[in-house]
Amino acid sequence: MTAMHATPTSEPIAVLGLGPMGTAIARSLSGAGELVRAWNRTPRRLDGVDAAGRLEVVESPAEAVASARLIVICVRDHAASRAVIEAVAPAVGDAVVVNASTGTPAEAVESARRAAELGLRYVTAAIMVPTSMIGTEACSVLYAGASEDLRATQPLQRALGGATDVVGDDHAVPPALDLAMLDVYFAGMYAFFHAAALAAAHGIEPARFLPYAEGIADTLRGSLADLTSAIERRSYDGGDARLDMCLSFLDHVVTTSDGVGLDRGLAGMVRDASARAMAHWPGATDWDVVAEDFLGRPAR
Image (cartoon, rainbow, N blue to C red; front, side):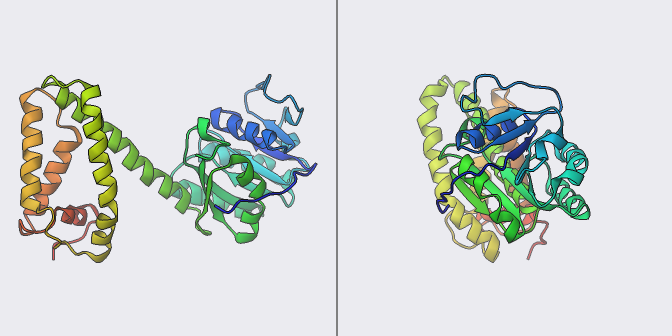
């Protein structure tokens, strides 16, 4: 991210939605010296967070967006955000609307389409961190939209801090990347819980297992570039991890889980995917070939 420095103006930034994330955004904007006018569907006070008097909570979305140069929507989902967009559209003027609500890629595209129908300047944002990281160097946000509209989001980018990734004008991309990363994150946590339970069934306390888990997580991180290359090239002949060998490892994990009465969890799913690959590919093929099944590609 390129550092940006500018002096906040007297034109407010509107924040529509004061759930945990919307509140964190409003506080970060106010803390950065921006004049913030916020609204929440359910009346809410933000006592004790704005000593400088730059954060005002108003009673209607129309009041919040009046004369605003930038509008940030952060509500429950895209269905709720579209209702807000339609409600404020007549009062938006030339301000850019940034929709930071969570949802699927299809929902984000539909929200962008509706905003375009209403003649609004519009940007999709996906916030990749929990509320505690908003306004810190650990913050990470993805944006998509027209280049001139993205430039108008710079006050928001500065206030949120951390890393900004502008991914182009395809509104499906920020939520797609968000969900793909969550896929890795939650699968990793779930796999850790299963692994910790497997270790505990053999008298190994979680704290004792932790450094081993951290070590294998580091190994995984170091493997991601090679996995990416494999699926891009559809080449599975590196010889480092044979499919038949890895299937044997996974059989042991599943058998041991069954033996201690532990649900197979993701290990069972990975074992089954590996077995399907073995039905179509030679055992000497790299285990990475299981990606072909995920991607719906026929055996070659």
